Image 1 (cartoon, rainbow, N blue to C red):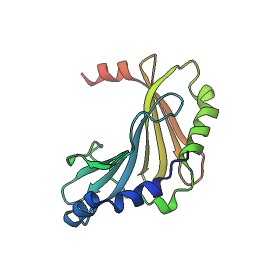
Image 2 (cartoon, one colour):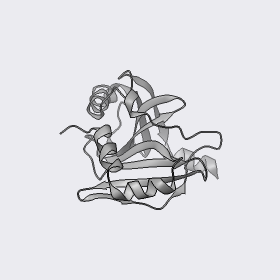
Image 3 (cartoon, helix red, strand yellow):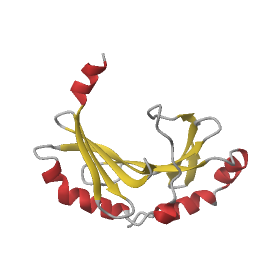
Length: 172
C-alpha cells in the first residue's frame, strides 16, 4: 500500500476534531509529517501531522489512528534559535515515501559502511527552503545515520553520521 500525504491531509481536514481546532488557530499551517520506522522502512506507528502556530511558536500534532485522528497538546518547537519552521506545501512534493525508501536502500551500504541500523524515524518537511524526506536511524554503534532526500527531485541532498556518545560528552 502506498502512503499518500495528500490523502492523509485531506482526511484530517475533513475530520470534525481538526475543523474545530482550525477555527481557533486560523494562522497555523502544516509543518511536517512524522512516523517512526524500522530499519526496513516499515512503519512502527501512526503518522503524525504537525501544524505550526506562528503566533505562539508552538506545534500541535494530530496522530492518525485506525478510527480517525487524535490531537496532542500544543508543544514548544524543537529547533535551533535561528531556524524557522517552514510551511509544507504538499503540491510541490514529487518524491513518494516509497521512492525515498528505495534511495535509502540503494545507497545505505555506500554512505554508511559497517553500520547496522536500528529503528529510526522519517519526517517530510520543508527545511532551509528545501522540501525533503529527512530519515534518521540509530545504529548499533550508537551513531545517528541521517539521510536527506529531495522531495522534489528524488535525489540525495545530504547525509551524515553523528557519533551520539561523543556529542553527549562535548555538551558537558
